[in-house]
Image 1 (cartoon, rainbow, N blue to C red):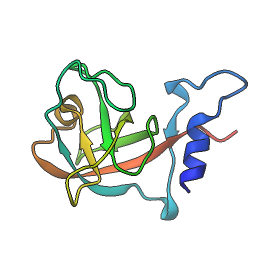
Image 2: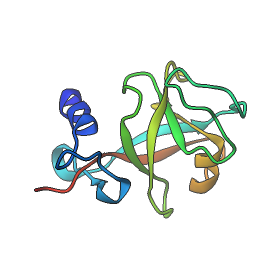
Image 3: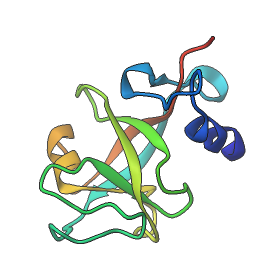
Length: 127
């Protein structure tokens, strides 16, 4: 499944790079979003992640220990809207958690501390 996700992330549409407006949530096995623990981290503004992303005050992204850099996801928490984000750092997260969220993303989701979030891979609309 990871290979399929990576290929979705790397392909282009009609020879042009995909834009965010074309991205849609992709249902996983059983048609359900996944639920995982996530927590916000104190990330220094100006720091460059190992994925090459410079952390800014408004950076929306996640750290994950399995998914490769650049994979796009939709994330949501309780009744919040969902946000399109990407893996901006590949590395260890505290035990029991799937993701670490940037402070800006945690703020937009309304998360304080460690909470269960919903997430799903982003993909392109069917042709």
